[in-house]
Length: 281
Image (cartoon, rainbow, N blue to C red):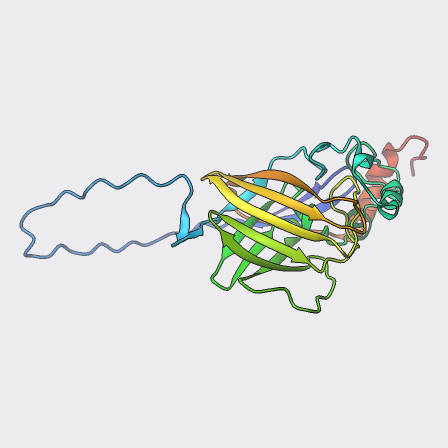
């Protein structure tokens, strides 16, 4: 069965979302007891499951569909609601970029011709913004690579395990990510990001010198914690850390796509009518 809905990501971005939900049946075969079994034995009681499971050996199990609780559009840990985005220690270049931003969220949120690159062009949100939308993501762990699959924009990223960054890294939307396990955490180091996206939904910019370190760990079975270190000497005079938590979801992953034509139609027919002084067409 196909279910088609239009869902806005904020004041001005519709999303075409399609879910396929199927029902699966699992057949289980029972083995016959041996004829020499003369008495029924009682199985020993099973040990309680640990609060944080491990995939194999010392590798922490981070599997599951994870969903962020809405309400934190900014990565500034001192200003998660984005009421004072200018308070971060920015370089003049970054401060000028922030002043020019017209985001749909935070204190500067506006319906009036926003210039959010996601909303205006359907550009990829970039690595850090992908964690800021109320859609799910899942983590797939293999010995050589870890894959993080995002429901939003149907994007996926590759984390190469136990390898260094290439000497010459091309600038891309998601950069080059290498990972390792440190105790119960997956640590991801990312460089090679282009400067075309925002750090968050309130318009904080970043340059191509952005260096990210993510530390993902399961604090209990139902909670995944992300500790993020942001370092960008071209845009910010000092690095800083932030934290997000995600809850385990029982919903299946769906497909969420961005349509530029539908964005433009939604802006003209719905959003423009809400801007004071804009004549109705």
